[in-house]
Image (cartoon, rainbow, N blue to C red; front, side, top):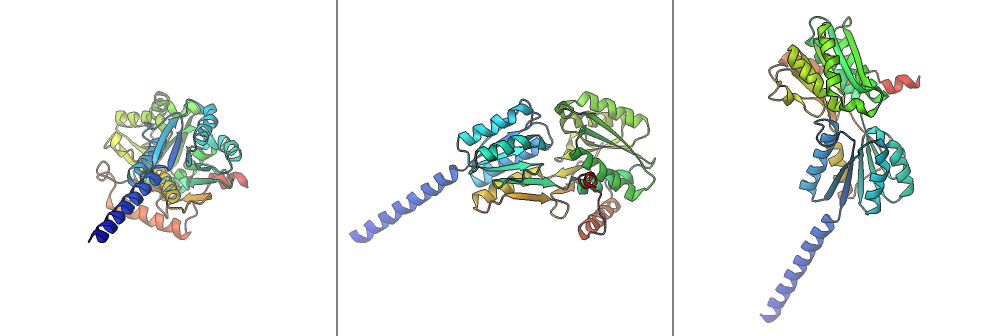
Length: 334
């Protein structure tokens, strides 16, 4: 009996040891997130990334820290600080971080990085890109279905190839529904401040609405809040971007073009934790629903069953290859 009791105690100690060891090992996985200036409260791109990180913290038990860059010049030092502190995985959000990632990935060859929205093409970097043109095509089609007067609008943040990609896909989707539709486009600027200028975005949107535009797709980061205000003022429609923004002006946001940055961040962290992390380029498109349109309680009365049937038909044709959505990136290579 004494022997059995001793064995039981010993087994209990081993079980406790391995439980504590496993918990400590899990807690030792540290993930650093570097956000753009607009930060985790931008209700869009960066907010989605932050949600993915916090989900990983809750579901996977990893330790996380988030920093927001005051400007583009800070990316390199913020990434480097995480590497110096031996964080296991560093996640950088936004194409503006490309050059900083390239420098730090070479400086810390054993460090694993994730870069969202650009391709670093380095052996220790997982680059995540989205087929924004595909998702934009779908919301462009929906916009055209609700633009009986034949005019839709696009307001981009910074005038860069990435946002031109949104615009091209949106216009193609609208023209799939109505080949004669007019697409009016404006951009907020050529610097990073373009993402954080709601007053100017509202001014541009009001001007478009006054010229007959019925639906505006805002791919402008935090500046999009100004477009939503204009839509409510004019009792017209706007379309959100990146995260589900339908709730912001219920009844006036027709849908949101989802760019599942949250899923990309969570997937990357989970794969790292599970020992399945891969570097190289990973793409998210309509097939995987990495880009999509949002239907919820805030807009379900705006989008009819016929609208949904049409959009799902278009999705299937994109996936099958029957519809080739024009890609601004490819057009610039010709």
